[in-house]
Length: 80
Image (tube, rainbow, N blue to C red; front, side):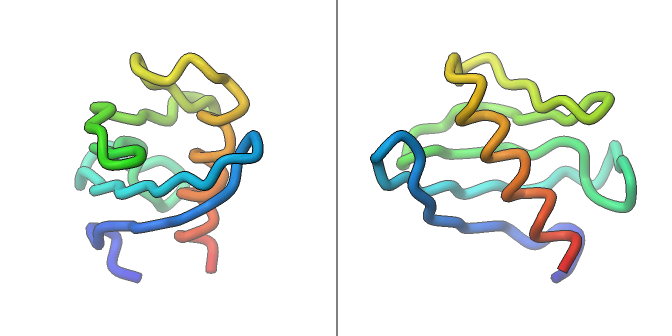
């Protein structure tokens, strides 16, 4: 996968099917992957998802477990 390639994922969380589209920014980079993504969740723009000190942050997502799941999924795209 190219470091700037858009990521499209479908996953279950909380018994619901979610779709995520995330476009990475070139900088900043943390551990060999982008640390910031512009994202849409279920077709709704949720702004930026940022990784800071191994914690994922977003102003629109109030469900910490969902945000963590999204972060894990994004990270796994760069580990494979």
